[in-house]
Amino acid sequence: MSSSALPPDAADTAKPSERLAELGLLLPAVPSPAGAYVPAVRDGDLVWTAGQLPLVGGKLAATGLVGDEISTERAAELARVCALNALAAAAAVAGGLDSLVRIVKVVGFVASAPGFADQPTVVNGASELLGAVFGDAGRHARSAVGVAALPLWAPVEIELVARVRG
Image (tube, rainbow, N blue to C red; front, side):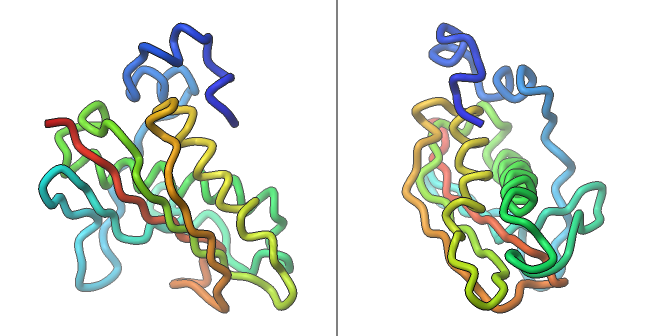
């Protein structure tokens, strides 16, 4: 998904919440932490999220290794779900989605089958969603890392850093 999915004038002037609505998406409820941490922390003008799993309605949308049980395409869809969860967590401590003015950094972890090396394509699911929601302000630095396993056997986990207005 790219920001070209929106009309050019909307991509330049729309608020992130408006772009999200135009994409037919809503921010989900912030998932409860599964450990001794918080979903997001604001420090000055930055918000740092904890790693977000592809939870939908409080349940993991899929489990397994990418390149084995999970296809690259499905994993990219799950990375998009993770990005929505990360945006919800960031918005909760920033004062709303429209208080986020720039996505600075994304880190994607992909539970990878042996020999799988297409982690960047998986994490593109998150990056493309962020670009569609924030336009140029959604372009970010990024890492896409293959790992042996993730919590609860999730196939992908996304965390982000965003700058907050004011």
